[in-house]
Amino acid sequence: MNAGGTAPGLHRFTRFVVSGATSTGVHVAITATLVNLLDASPVTANGLAFVSATLCSYLLNTLWSFSSRLHHRTLRRFAGVSLLGLALTVGISWTAQWLGASYWTGLAGVVLTVPMLTYLLHRTWTYRD
Image 1 (tube, one colour):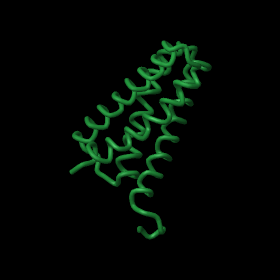
Image 2 (cartoon, rainbow, N blue to C red):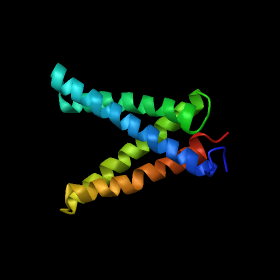
Image 3 (cartoon, rainbow, N blue to C red):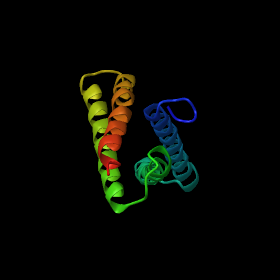
Image 4 (tube, rainbow, N blue to C red):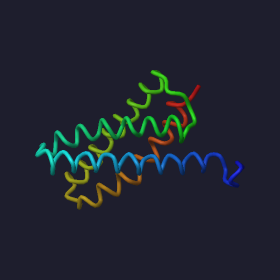
């Protein structure tokens, strides 16, 4: 147990969730700003927002969630896990659409799969010494 009375793994996971929510907010804010104020295309806006949110996520997770140092090795690993998460998100969404399921089904598949997988990969690989 840590000083707050929670298990270290739960504490780290909670920080990971907060970091993810914050990064998602960054993504949404950048996309909405670029589309609504600068008349950017949604594809361009989401692409730029994804890169920005991923950088935000890397900084928050490295410095806060996993209490690690910024390092080119962890940045490369983090980027790889993030790209895997993106590929899984697109794959799950595409599969749900191909099966004729509601987009909510694909979204549920993404939400129930991708965050947990990326957390486990970060914990066991990205921030492994």
